[in-house]
Amino acid sequence: MFRHGCVPILLVALGLSLSPQAVHADGERPRWTLQVDPLTAALGYAHLQVEHAFSDRHSVYLGPHLRLYDSVFASDTQDYTGIGVEAAYRYFWRAQAPTGPWVQARGVVSRLSTSETSTPGGYFGGLVGYSWILQDRWVLALGAGVQYIHMQIGELGVKGVLPAAHTALGVAF
Image (cartoon, rainbow, N blue to C red; front, side):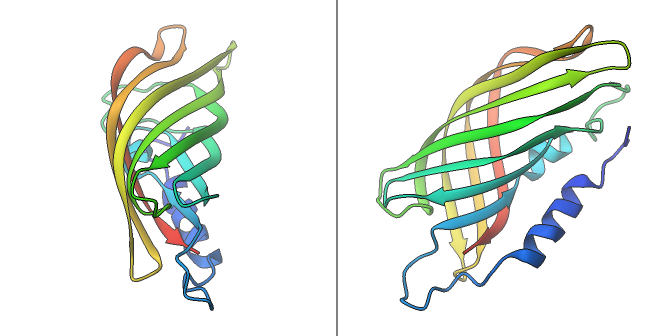
């Protein structure tokens, strides 16, 4: 298990190296983004989110959910892994998706494992936030809300109703 995983750094580097230019030939705004969530990564969960704005007001994102290392804030070792998928739907009330103010429903379904056992885990929640696309390429997003989380296996992990936060850095194309 990684103590302070390098997975989020590798995901950002991969995303930045593979991303196409954001400026469209016809001058339209980007409809796709590739993002990582640095706060979630610091908490021990690596997420790579591929977002698509399928209309001026609606977008969805999908990506892997990986729990391969402990939180940088943890004082003890939580020796379990989690592998799954994260999905979200966003409604943009200014009709500028994937940029501007939004309300979001998101969820994760994953499989949690230790050396002795495995169990399903996940969470769902609602958030409000804002996404910026800077210089027609760079994405910055922030959001806050509430979630029910059940990422617990035995005595390890967390379970309950908790605040939800969304931070994202990435590229638009």
